[in-house]
Image 1 (tube, rainbow, N blue to C red):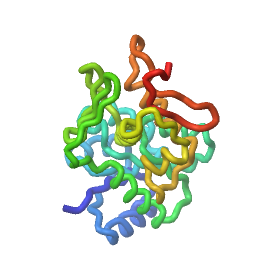
Image 2: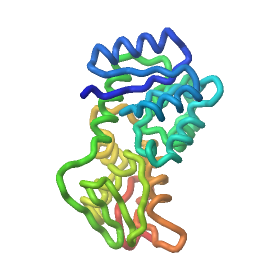
Image 3: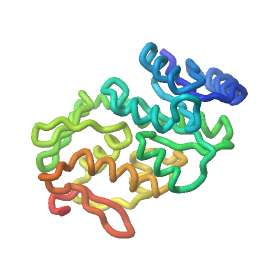
Image 4: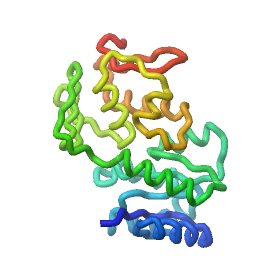
Length: 230
């Protein structure tokens, strides 16, 4: 079965260009021209990945992303945000809303397709049948579930991959570049600063107020999963 990509974009020329290139590369493509249509389309025909423009009529891409991340059925659907905004603060805002990747206009169709493939590879569930544990944190790789002391933890696909890598190497300190390679792949177009955004989201998800922080920050270098992090 071909992967299904939903393009949410109000520029018809760009939509046509993306559709042509994605279909040529073996993807099925759906379209939506505004935020409300996007939400209806996702509910009726769930895509494997969403290419989502930031500036849209009726609902912004940021708001769509937030709504999708609040819904259990779309919590882990991969989202690539498209935007003409180039400031680092805008990139962080887009990632904080729940996007898995961020592409700045103008871009080449080849670059976007490379990112689509990279995100889909990263978000494909594992079938190895393994389970990973550290302290009171557990990861079921078959069920794609994470719990802490029996409490379910809901993670996006990028945070899941980051946590898996850390769980496979407890106590080891990884640089941002090493975490990028592990969670995004060497062919991904991602800046080291992106790691900080996703680690912050991961930390928020696994650590409640009365639980010790299991992620240790090593200043000016990176992060480690450490029982003595706090």
